[in-house]
Image 1: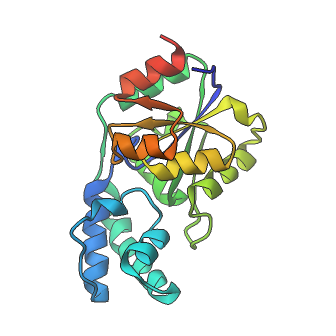
Image 2 (image 1 turned 135 degrees about the vertical axis):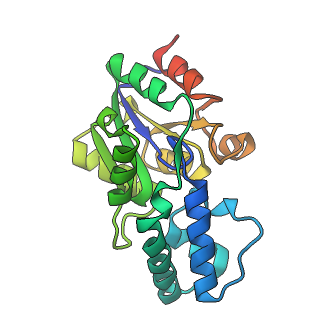
Image 3 (image 1 turned 180 degrees about the vertical axis):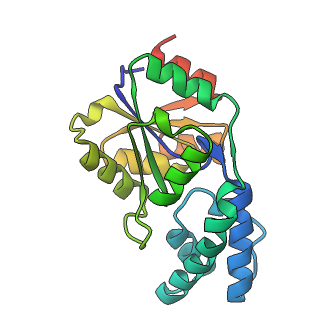
Length: 216
């Protein structure tokens, strides 16, 4: 593996397992909107809400805005912390930071929610910058978030940046912005999804991710 200086982490499915809160809020929003709740709810884990409600539920722009508002109404009070940190994450982050790597978050979750979650779980201090989507509906797709983090932090050497995430959106977003990507298997995306998307590396556990990045 190349010697990467900057490490960009996805949040949901990579640092924390937020599936309970997301699915509970999804069901609540769809029921309030009068939509049938799909059998496969896991496909909503990863993409932005705007993309998910549009592509998976066939909503138009106005309906999407309403669904997102209902979802976030419950999420901001309750769903946000129906969440847990994956085992081994804090040890991985500590090892990487101690080795001199600079850590960042690049998530399609609204930035204000991402900061609250990482502060709640005591992980915020590991990151130089926590970047996410704009709460008003812009900067939702992964490549937009990555470009935002690069711009906000002044990082110019993209060959020194590694994106780390669990879904195809992380891989595609990284490659679309000229970054390499490590796909992780402890989150929501299966191996075939990540390899088909073209992940440059695969890590089965947080420990193995740290070992690979540090060349151990």
